[in-house]
Length: 121
Image (cartoon, rainbow, N blue to C red; front, side, top):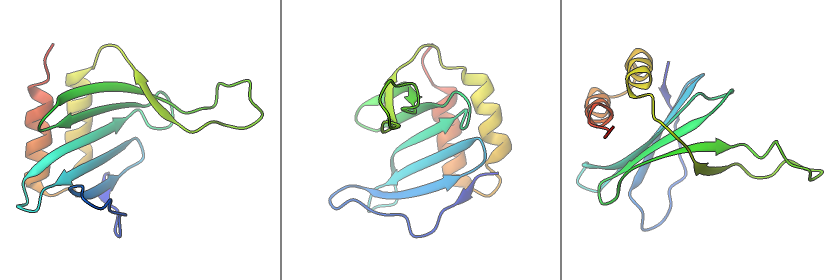
């Protein structure tokens, strides 16, 4: 179940950030001063083969795989980064998001679900 994380760090001159965390998903939502959603990032597959779907009002969608930095020849784990990824399993991710979003504000759930349904391809 996604639950809101309190006291989320904010970045000056960027939209206000909210963070919802669960066992297999993370949802980050950026809100403008008006309350309108500027964008979101839904991370899914947490703990196994994590992916991140990002939607921003002025840029649209990106879908990336999270390279956790574990597969390296270096002595130390590297910082996780987002790298290009393939097909987004829209129906599966949407169903999982809706099942886990019971503690997320309904306006955010509706917004994210509508965007997921409208994902191209």
